[in-house]
Structures are given as structure tokens and as C-alpha cells.
Image (cartoon, rainbow, N blue to C red; front, top):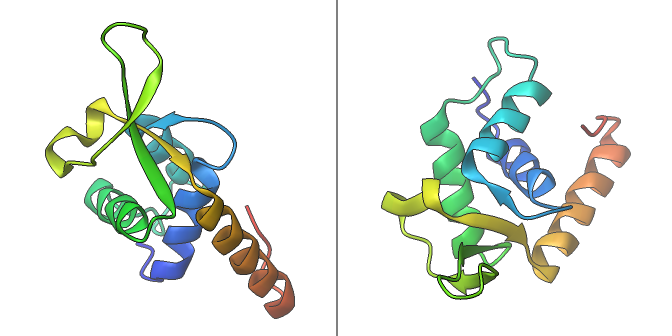
Amino acid sequence: MITNNDELGRMVLEAVANDYEELEMIVSEIVDWTGGGNDVPDRKQIEHTLMVSIADKDVNAYEPSETSGQLIPTLADPQRLHTLWFYITEQGKERLLRLEEEDRNSGIGGL
């Protein structure tokens, strides 16, 4: 199981960096990236890290508008994570770039 919060936080940011993503897709991507072995974080870890990323303003939560179908910003409620969509903020993009730079400088490869 991944115990490094920075590593899991980076994975969450990478999962939402290019498109709006649902929780299931975020979990699926992280499982794929970790190879399905012993380093796979459990769903609760991923949900917690996603909520921390939202609290830190690195990720925003969205829900579909009932009238237009477009995604509109909303508050993230842990009970509704499975119904929301997520996307990285500008601050999150900057944090992700710093984390990737730290990985390169330390010789750790990105995903």
C-alpha cells in the first residue's frame, strides 16, 4: 500500500490534470499506475487524498447542471464523491509541476 502522501497526492493530481474525471476513473488510473500489486492504495486512501486536494484548493469538484448538462462548480461532500467530477486548478497544476520537478531531481520517474 502506498504510504507516501506526496506520491498519492501527485497521482490524484495527474489523474485530473488533463480532463474532468469521475472518482471511478481516478481510482482506476491509480490502480493501473501502481500495477495492481502491493503498492495499490485502497479506495478510502484515494478518496481521502482527493478530499485533501480539494481542501488545499488543488482540485475543484463539479456536478452536472440539471438544465444544461454542463459541469458547474460545487462543494465536495464525501458522501457524494461518486456523483461528482473533478478537475485540477491552476494552483494544483503548479503543485504538480513542482512535484514532478522534485521527482526528476531525485531520480524518481513520473507516471
